[in-house]
Length: 363
Image (cartoon, rainbow, N blue to C red; front, top):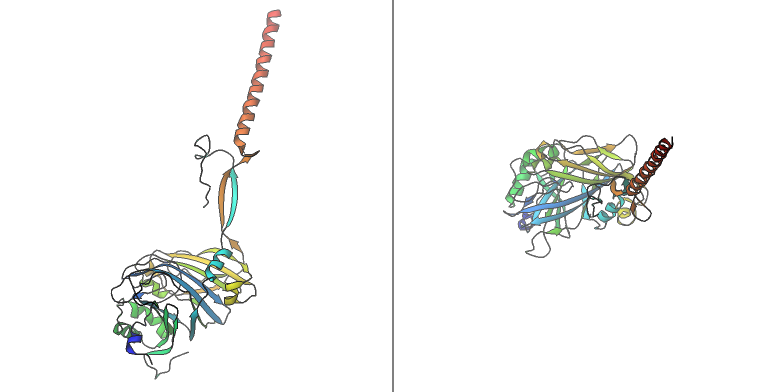
């Protein structure tokens, strides 16, 4: 049994991933609703998430970079089934970044531009661009683990008002709309993962990059919880890596801008990625989405397989002036050749004119 004080800060506000920016006493971030302790300020400077789905089990690995003045804070993440929680591998995100990095290509142009000689000194920028029983308590604790900087509780709730009351009783200021936004999850008998960020060193402020957190649960369809993000007070963004048998896409934009695929292709997992997904080839889809008006978010993301597993990689072009012979601009040779040709023609015409003048004088 937990003591009242140890439950005290065991919180939570929805977690899904992306790189969002929220700072201040706001109760939302890119992942949903954030609850700092007391009147402290906290912001999520960056969130990155990876989802692995094999048709039966869904795993979400998320990493947060935070700032502000809070010494403790929390999220609550609805999940469709009983969840397990553990720390993720910090090497996972650099590996995915390497696999999905853009392809760089050079393309040349012929005529000089503003930053090329003779218009400038020669410097130029070449950058391109389980259901609760009827007798269950309104809020129940399934389990609790201490994982790095996280105090993790797995909860059940049959009443969103009871969940809100529990959180407020334990010292967290909540947005008025939280109960309403939790209602759809309670109605579907989802469970919750409550995550309290509590540094192991007493008194330390939550700052910088936190340990990745890995959550697993049974799922016969791929759903990424997003509904609580509608509580955000600033524009939000979602950066999501999806590992599955096929290329995946959201069924709808759920109130945000059109999702953009930044990478799609078959990968053979190695290292930290293999520890998450196994060593068999998988299709990796990287998706970015912006939410300029978070209040318009109208549900969770459901992702489905596309009609074809079409590969895609972003291309960054670097424009360079076409040169020949060790750096001589091709246009200058063309201009020089043209001038020589014009000179030759002019000389021939002048010679012919002189010849005609001589003949006319002799005649």
